[in-house]
Image (cartoon, rainbow, N blue to C red; front, side, top):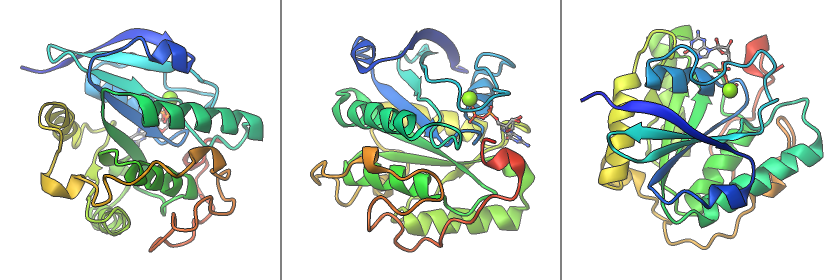
Length: 246
Ligand SMILES: Nc1nc2c(ncn2[C@@H]2O[C@H](COP(=O)(O)OP(=O)(O)O)[C@@H](O)[C@H]2O)c(=O)[nH]1
Ligand SMILES: [Mg+2]
């Protein structure tokens, strides 16, 4: 049976987030990575999630209930919007960090990564934080229709190396590529607790939560964690305007 995605609630604070006790999969990504488009593709609807003309404006957290399964897809605010103030970025990071660190029913974090871009510092910060916190990562490369198959495969390999063997899924909200695979992974991670074998289970899964996303530098800034950029090439300025959220 094809799952259905329904917007159940929109909240703004950690206190409001604590009201949800069903299993949850968080969805995060840099502003403009294609998160809203992917939610719509998962829902097979055109306008469930708003595709923003002014990226970075939405600070809300949307709880989508998956039926009939019963778990939530928790759509977190996009991060790293260049025009946000430092204070706003700090507030985002603290909220996300506290949610990810304390939500007792969190099953996984789906991190959306732009398949056209070299790994960006903020993506490295978030994935590094998740791995050190023992959170199951489900990385997803978006906008796959904008790359050749060879570029996609290279980007997948690059991220797999950075993430210690976890190869991202490749999706396109535009063509629908990979969307069924993503659904299968989301459902599996909720029921089984892992997606593709032990590769998804962090080798340092029991590591202390000793990293702070709140220290994350704005996009293009210095690395927040000395080890966040291991094996990763330096982020390069995005050349296409819709790749940066500006
Ligand atoms: N070609 C292509 N464009 C996409 C895809 N997903 C999103 N976009 C475009 O990227 C821009 C940002 O998308 P949006 O979903 O609002 O990103 P968000 O800020 O992460 O929610 C919009 O112009 C979308 O039309 C995709 O799979 N393929
Ligand atoms: Mg959006």
